[in-house]
Amino acid sequence: MRELLPPLLHERTAVLTLQNGLGSDELVARLFGAERVLGGLCFVCLNRVTGADGALAIECYHPGSVSLGELGRPATDRPEKLAILLGD
Picture 1 (cartoon, one colour):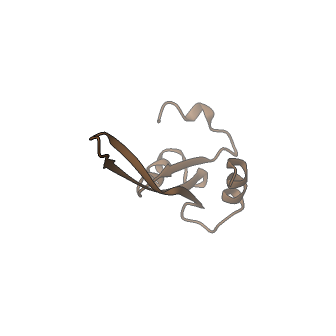
Picture 2: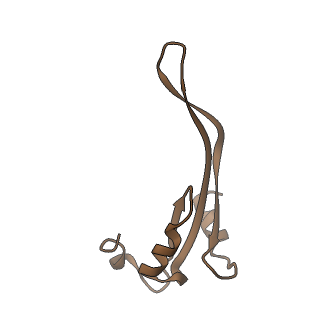
């Protein structure tokens, strides 16, 4: 990440982290600047089950959602604009 991202960063480039936990936003902020960071918290509800035939399968109880936000500052319009681009 430290070598791959810098050539892609320009004046208005944002960096979005998508995760199902916490912690990477701060690392990205230290590496590339907190003003660039948009955080995304992902939620999906799946369960691995064993079928009657012994085969493993995945059951989906909630297809998922993503919440977007700014890191450590008041909300701007960036998360909303990104949600529209991603197909909300």
